[in-house]
Length: 383
Ligand SMILES: Cc1cc2nc3c(=O)[nH]c(=O)nc-3n(C[C@H](O)[C@H](O)[C@H](O)COP(=O)(O)O)c2cc1C
Image (cartoon, rainbow, N blue to C red; front, side, top):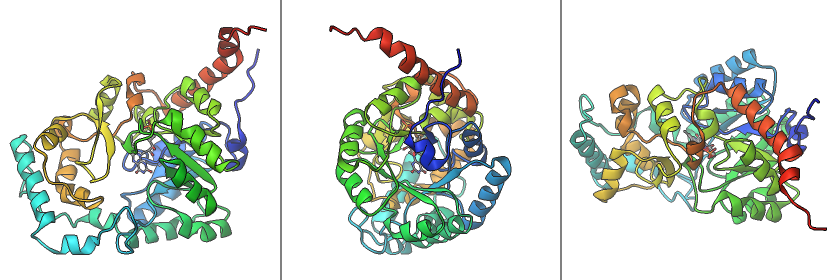
């Protein structure tokens, strides 16, 4: 017997086969993973945050060579770093201009902690205004967006910050815009300004995350903004998670951790090893990497930082203070056990590396089995 194809309204909206979207993951979801997920019938989304506009242009060209199917690009909307938005009331330039004060104190603390943990960055940790600093600036994001417009990328996802300002330009080019939220209040705001699809991300998620769990968050977001389609995110790694998300009213799922354990992910082999061996209690939410709450696999550097109550800067200045160490560690294999490997609580369900196509197909097949046979056979009706 052939199975019907599991589709939702999301598939029609985005012109994809299955309601499964690869979450944007900077430095992990690159050309290969994006193209593989789109080719397999989901929507691949490129994690573009650290890319210069030229790198982004090149990456989009490469994806188009590998797949003719729709795909997306994820970065942050220009945060109000100089415009004074509520959650980032900082002037990035003034922080970075000086080699003294809070910034220097935190950078020097991180350098010292790194040394004490046996991680020696040759030449010491310097002021963090390197390429990363440029990447977090509003000017940089605006240049990335110009590239995205030029290519008429089918979908843009804003991982942080509201994409409201870009909706008119996106519409002109037939692009769809998605925004990540962690509360129903944020979802209402996004829907009211015309965001096409809202991603409701629960605290279980890897990377930057909020406080509300996926199970209560998704239906509250659905109720708040219906008929705007909602993607459920956070802790969804298999067919059971997909069915649960659909039951909560989501039109599809936005999955990060599930696709990290694939050969196509750009993550370091050590990050992948940590991911497949981690259990559900092995992650922690910490501000020590970026200054904003982010979920990663527990590691000695983060644990010591928190034990010592080390100085912290607001997002995203913290990541600049730590950027030399981050960069060094990501290039030096033997330091990676100390590293902040972003991963969600669903990592306990990820046991092996599998090609992205297999991850997606098994998610669809398991969900289909549950919907067609599993649930009908387990639910007993007392009529
Ligand atoms: C390694 C990693 C990197 C991430 N980087 C980004 C990013 O650059 N932009 C973004 O919008 N979200 C980022 N996230 C969050 C994901 O987009 C997504 O919301 C999250 O992975 C969903 O939860 P899950 O990991 O339980 O599937 C990242 C998550 C991980 C695990």
